[in-house]
Image (cartoon, rainbow over all chains, first blue to last red; front, side, top):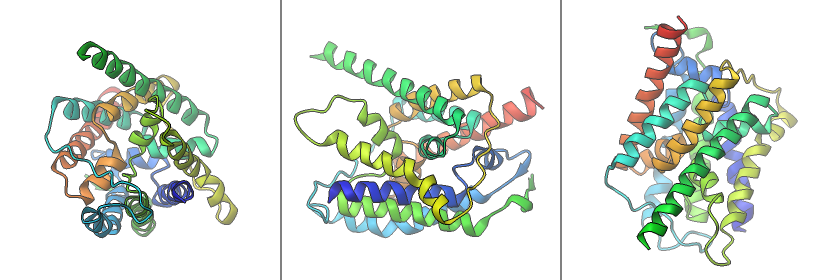
Length: 142
Length: 147
């Protein structure tokens, strides 16, 4: 059941990205180009998403377990740290450069775009760098 | 600032956003998970502890995401995907997005959608930073370097 739900959520999420225009990097960059011909559409994507997700997250806070009995994985971290700041900075630069963030890149990969394939491989390499450096750090601490 | 009214798609963007929000809401309520794409994908690269199905649900979620264009194509004409960035930019951007989202512990979905819906201060900071960096990068690339 959990796995079927995971598939359905991934599918709905992806269809939402396509409908919203997020899966098209040219539209994302048009949103990020304040000094050019600005396309404000993507601000509405965020507004629509938060409007729909706000109540479910409120309810989730009071639930000891999920509706399917899984443990509630709400993030506990609250403090700002250097990792969040520099990580977000690097992410934003990459996002502006290509017009892809992780979700839309996967959707475009599913649509068979060659550049999305290369982007996702490079992104996975970047994520692997993080995992290797984290593993090394925890070994040093141990 | 000039607004590009010709390409402005308020209704489909709002509806698409609502679908994304519905997906994120279902995931937290039914699976107890945050629908943050970078976390789901990045966690797949980590060797699972014990015999949990950690990797299975991640793979299946991503499969759903990858199938979205296919499902869309069954009922509706394909939407345009235009990628203006060159190959070199694509590679650099991919690495930046990969490293950055993992250190920041989230991307547009995890921080932008789920985090802001939870009223998380950390996510608000992350969202403001990556949006500012995105605006600045496009400004530099389009109006200083390539302008």
